[in-house]
Length: 452
Image (cartoon, rainbow, N blue to C red; front, top):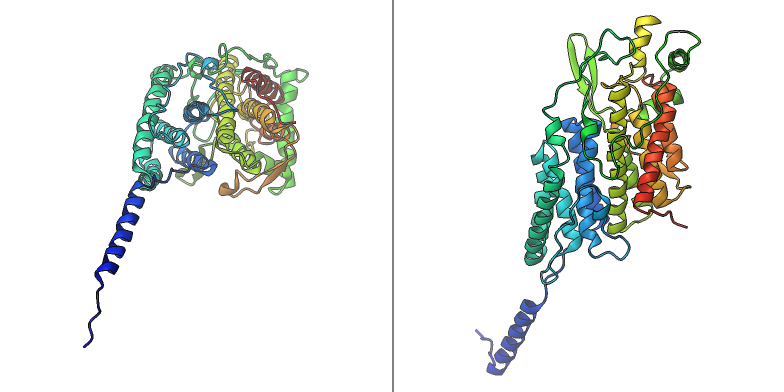
């Protein structure tokens, strides 16, 4: 049997090569953790999914969106040449702690971590979000442990800072305030509607601290037509418009475009369904979530980078949040009865609206206000003639609708409430004006400029 002849010189050379390779690899810097806009979309999508599961009301949902976005934006603004801090433009906001330049802090990663941590803190089903978060954290820690740990520490400092600001917005105080008192003796006043007859939700939302508004009353709309069953009165004409439009649409059948539009913009987080002795709920996104979805569509279509993506999410969510504060202030001031109640009591006891009536007063229309506000901001960011295909409702079995602009989409969203049988004309038209005026204020407040 022949044995290999080991040459001592060869062994020395091989050993030297291995030693050199080991030293080289040990000295090689670890790969930096890469964050893309899709990571932010993933975080937002997960929040929406959990919000649907947890059934948050539209106003509360707007609050869940806005704080994480602001945190992410403020972190990114530290390194951005295009977007500056908005800390001086937000009510009672104290600038966030700055990242230590002597540490290996990944600003993009810190922004995403803060977004995820605050989102998790604002929902109920934290474990559902933690599953996504843990999988990403494990991956990032393996990629670059030092960068991950130092970035996480910084992100949590920002989260704690935002939580202090958030804790002073009166949300916790409103959780213990009295329920809304229904005045059953006054036919003009809102009453709970079938099938669940739920109490009026968030009657104290006007006490939530606004983000850019001087007060909840800053964009108070003109009052609605005075309640009257006189057939020549403006109110009665608007009431009959709801009734007649609904009957005409119903006669066309379920495949009519008006019904498609009504259902597409329904965005009712909790719809009660009765089957015999059983009652259950179908869950959907909120109106704000629909416009957050449109924001995602716009940023993807324009191949927006991380800073541009978070900017769009942040400014839009601020407009939506202030929109709900403004709208809810008016709702419980005017306290106007819904069409379903008046029609059932005075015109047709068997009439049902195409959409289920939401559990709060009629004027002004929340969809109109929020859609007007969001569309104004998105128009300022992406342009007036921005065409897009809205696939936000696909998960709920509804087809894609295409729009030539954000304003066209907001006009359709507002009109959908007439088709759905849940709002009078004034709430739609004046609500849309209320929202667009508020949105214009946000645009000017942040000096947003549309692309040339």
